[in-house]
Length: 478
Image (tube, rainbow, N blue to C red):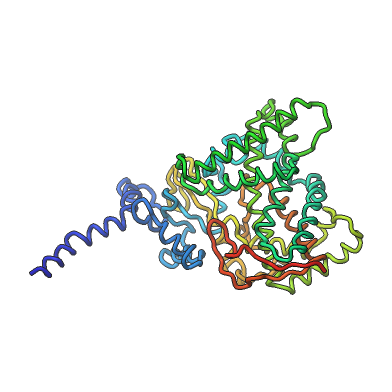
């Protein structure tokens, strides 16, 4: 009798309750579209209450360490179809876009989608990543001219090399270093110098700590109370802002002195809609650009060191390209024009960036209800452009997990390579990132040998892909 009652209770109560919880998000978000006869949401599964599909997401990214299988599982279950899937991640209902056509539709539709900033409080509400329309166009224009055009890149090429060469020499003297840690020091110091002419170790160390704290809060839940990562990030943001504001005030008091020809100087004298940028706008844009380029460029350098150690035949080809240039220079720094002539190096750089997949996905928000191939993207929902899947899909790149610069002998399929985003929001610093990577490859190739301490180190994928040891190497000069 007790067994029969338990079985009846299970059938009558527990199983329906479990089914209700399992499909709760789908009932909550999808059912209204069915009842009101709206266009259907894309196929998919919204997950359980509150958590959505975060547990499967973490399972594939952290436990299995097979992040691409998160999308593969959806393709297997729901088919390729429209190239979009509904889900619930990071506390929000979402639409995943994972094909070239779906991503193009989202990234090049400013009238339908707006950049979803994780926190305007951290990156700055008046920064390039937050403003829209004409203000975005004008601010973007001055930033691109200041850091991403040939004249600017020529100057940056010469400016960054003293610290790069000094750092590499220091690495060889120490014998063993952690590439990611050391790359961050180089990138941050050069960024701080070109953006705001900061060079003293004391200021650099302080800003470095503050920006690491700020970046640590970007992917955290926005809970602003002591002890949370977001609260700490806000404190770091205010302290970093105070340092930049003090520098601005100093420059204003010394008007007429020799210009510093850095990004801050350009933004201070920029006119938008017939008026100069405010101090807050200048600071917000510098902070947002540091945030965008600091970690990503450091990771790219780390991965270049990793792959060149793993693929010595690629490194040998690089040496064949760069040694003649080095001999011609006779100790002088490589120039922007010489960098532009290094065709094989350019292919290596693109392959490093593709393999690194530093920005696995980027976010947009639907400004209004948007229909795409018969499906509805509701107003206010987040759309995730799953860029990583474009770059690791064998339909786009043959043997995608093999490091093969020669694949760049031919242009990639349209829409399959968007490592810097797309549309009007494409990363304004994409060329400066490629430049720094090329310069460090040049100096490593002509002057150093190195090997991985842990060649079989496991990989982690959150918050960014990197080996568990952050690429520890033994390095020496020729």
